[in-house]
Length: 212
Image 1 (tube, helix red, strand yellow):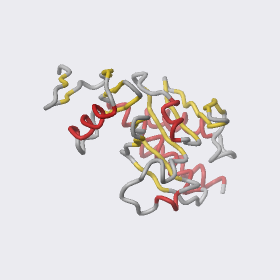
Image 2 (tube, helix red, strand yellow):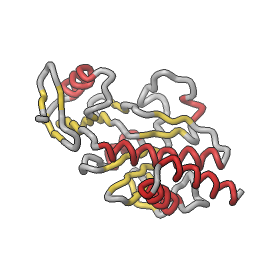
Image 3 (tube, rainbow, N blue to C red):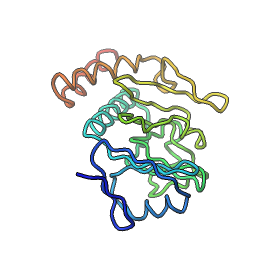
C-alpha cells in the first residue's frame, strides 16, 4: 500500500507518519474529510499537520493500559468517565487525539455530555498515548492543562505531571499514589504477551481484591 493524500482521499500504510505544512483551516478541512474515521490520526501544531496510521500494537497497548486504569479505579470505587476516540481542539492552538482520556476529579462535569467544549469544559485529568512512531509530544497537552499524561514508549510507561505550567517525569501517579502503577502495567503487559489480555486483566482484579 502506498501513501495517498489528496483532497478526495487519504490513505496511509500502517506505521506511516506524514508531516505537512498547514494552517488551522487546512487541519479542519482534513478532519472534515476524514469524518468518523479513526484512522489516520490527525494532530495540529501551529503551522503543521501530522497524520499517523497506527500499527496494530498501538491499539492493543492502548487498550491494555486503559483496562488497567479502569480496573484500578473500580477497585478504589472511584467514579470516572472515559473517552476514546476523542478529538481535543483549541482553534489556532492545538488539535490532538489521545488514545484514551479519563475524567477522574472532574467526571461530573462531563457525565452524559455528547460533546465537550474545549476551553470551557474542564480538560481530562489523565490522558494515555502510545508512542510507537515518535508522533507524541507531551507538551501538546500543555495548552489544555491536563494534570497527568501517560506516554507509553519503547515498552516503558512515562508518567508526566503538570507543575508550574510544565510537565515533569514522575515515579508515581497522583491518582494512584498508593500503588506502583508502573510495575502493575509492566506486569499486565508481560502477562498479556505471554498469554492474552483477558487473562492479564483477570489476574490484576484478583490481585487487587486480595489487597482489599
